[in-house]
Length: 235
Image 1 (tube, one colour):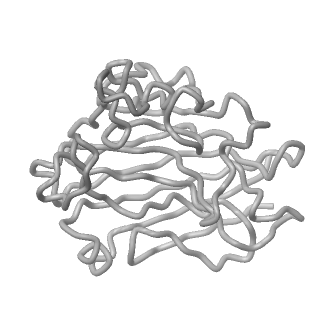
Image 2 (cartoon, rainbow, N blue to C red):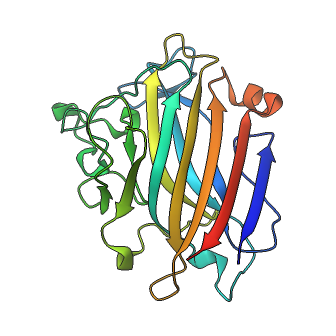
């Protein structure tokens, strides 16, 4: 079965009334301001602007599988960058890795996950995260994601990539210096594989989104800055 779904949202949250429980695109709650000490602030006064991006699923059942069992396995062929070309911030114990295993709460070592950029297949950053970077993620350190990079769960049976109660799976945190950041956007596109649990087969989808940095959530909602699209196929 092949399904094409296109979504446009006036906020940074994705929503859909599609007829099947499928990957619907990438979503986010939008950019927010964070300081190095872990305190939240408005973007115009914060040290950093931060965005968390999710793989979004819709709510209906499809192919006999429950939407609640939607589970991300991998992202690949990714292209992720800021419109002004600025680099992403890192604050981890590896000196700038995109691997979430090196991002955990250890300020004494300069590891500050709330302002660290990393990719993930669900879960939380830290040593227990089972996400791995694929060979196209080279280099795996630095302020930019290589074109065509990917990441995947190293333990599919652990179901770390299973969607949460909002039908979404966390796939990455991206952090930039907040200075002069207003009006800039992150462009995010990737292919993705997922299933509904071990033994259910593998599905594939493609999605993209763009989110602009604005001064306040209210302005984001009014301006309608998120655009999300996806298409799906099954192997």
